[in-house]
Image (tube, rainbow over all chains, first blue to last red; front, side, top):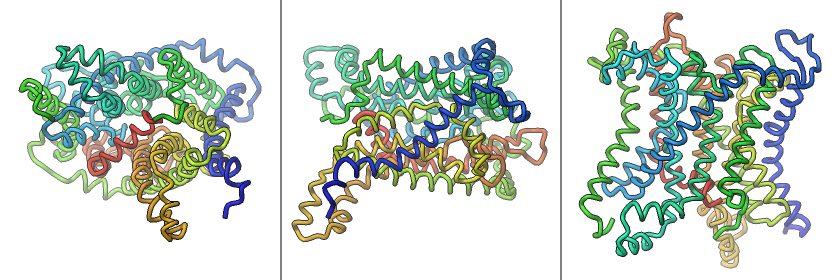
Length: 293
Length: 278
């Protein structure tokens, strides 16, 4: 039999211990370590010249146009892809919810991009748009070098992101739609409400928490964008995102001090985005309140 | 759905369905057709191949690089999934069943980890792993995968566990079952769907990751498929081996498509339970 001491408090924490230890050692500790590293001049190619420099790394990142360009690029990609995904995801969610013919088939098909490796999705679209191998130019009658210019490269990156992650968005939205009582919609229809009125006055307000959660998760995810850009442009034509900059400084140039400063700044951007969402949507209660009917 | 559906409604939703299916399947069809083209036809700018060859598939399996990456991906993703789910089950059970103080704090901490930008920790991990000898090893990738999927699995499992009528096992024991029997015959079948949903999501995360794979590995020893494909070198080092890349992409995509199609219900349940019910 269990001893009374073990039942409540201690056993609870004991069972959470492995998870807690894993999360602390592999994420919380490294972020603190990154902060520590960011205060030093520390280049793995010249390990002997390591020295404490305080905020110098931050100053050089923040005064560099590369960082600000990267931040702007990341914001452009995030805003464009997330807003299109929200619209498209909503349409898909409605279709999945209402599909009459082959409902299962539609749900399954829409889910497929979710299961596809991002690198593969990036390659599929890269090959499709490339003038040498692709069919997009011959299909549209253009002869554009898509990856040769900044904005056309952005377009391909955003198309890839949208294709790959809209299913995730639509699933989260679908969960919100299923909360809308059918009787309510039917009653509104009997009372003469148009399809748009039913959607905007009944469905949308009930879905608001689901929309907020989907937007928050997708925004944070899009802000971290790395795979697609790495595969399609490697940051060429001024398409570097903040994650690409971080990777280049840390792993290619092995500059741990400067790279860690970039890492910490990205971390703060993510904190800011989360805080912003929590404020705008008042999500805090939804996310931490646990006992819900 | 019901008799009040009008003809126009039906038409709209059917068109929508066809468009949705086309949206997801066109790119897949494109990469498959690219992988079947003769090398000479790769630049013909056509969607469909004029003649078909399996040459690219033969060549990726003849090379040591791709099979090694496939093996690494499979092993690392499976081990990460099993370990993450085991650890998450303990925590989710504790949070749902034992009302210990600080469980809300624990869940909030887990959530904050879920929002974490992975690029923020690759530098320190790179340095730490080189120091303790985990750089370019399976464990070196499994550890971050477990950790970064823990929040999602804990939240998803907790959402599922809340729905389980736990008192049923007491009833089974009254009826004469041993505690282990009660657990195995009553609780396990009830918990299995949720556990399975969480497991698929963790597997897809580990299978998909690219950032850790390129940052923390360097050779065939632990390099997974996404990183291997990105650095594919063909027979000639000077041109990107489009055909081989396409074939490799198809090989790693087909199993996942089957997985998604077979377990779509579980995936939908898993993704939505954590996010909405939580």
